[in-house]
Figure 1 (tube, rainbow, N blue to C red):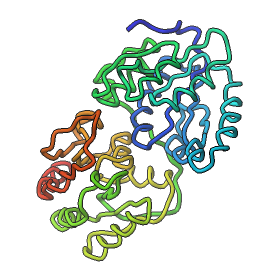
Figure 2 (cartoon, rainbow, N blue to C red; figure 1 turned 120 degrees about the horizontal axis):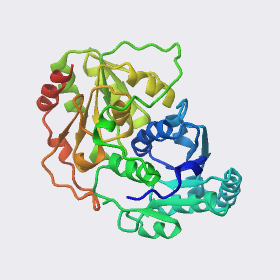
Figure 3 (cartoon, rainbow, N blue to C red; figure 1 turned 90 degrees about the vertical axis):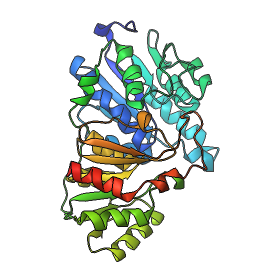
Figure 4 (cartoon, helix red, strand yellow; figure 1 turned 180 degrees about the horizontal axis):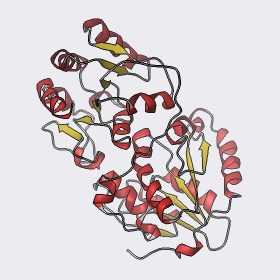
Length: 339
């Protein structure tokens, strides 16, 4: 790919990646490579307010710019407040705005923020590389990489290669950890973390099998949770096993801190599990109806277990509950290898 812009003219970059936690983490890998090659560049990041904690304290991000587009669903008039906010962000006069999300809403955000000054570039995926192809109409330059390709490779393509940076597979595998947090006085004692929740029921590994894993490993296990349903699962697990305790209620800073101190993370295809990869912590990600080859990066310490079902990333099967068929003994075997 040819460089889209002259490197000497890159002064201000704005990344648009609104949500969700795992998607944001998969894009953050690019920051260290951009800053290494352009140490004086300013990098700002537009993100949904509820996920800004994932980005906080990262030295490679100069400004976190929160929005609340989700509020528009409840109150249509909120769109005017959000447009006003984006117009304020646009006054930063970015040289480059990169939409790493590839949705219509993120493309519109990119256009509002990046369309003020002559010579600025709005970069995103081409129409064949995203589900909402109409989004590509809002970009000045586009990047082509199949939607079915690994999400981390896709983010490197749009965020790094579009700037002329050739990031190799070994660069990604030797990455420095890139989630940052403030220490606090909360202290849990544990060896393993269970991430029992997920965005959809068919992405969740059964609580009964988590219990079987705990009873076979006989390690100190902490269950992290983010909502009432996950807390109920944590309570049930804790009541069934002396090896399991429940994490204190916390925020994203606390979650990053806890995961950074674990010996092993076990969970499904969801944000907190992907934090382990970002923090260079051993992990087992359990996949059912989502594609393991696309949604994570397998390393010597970050492993996956996938059910036998075939997955089309362009059309996920909401009735695929094959994750429930994965044997707890398979998880235990892999966990013992990593511990």
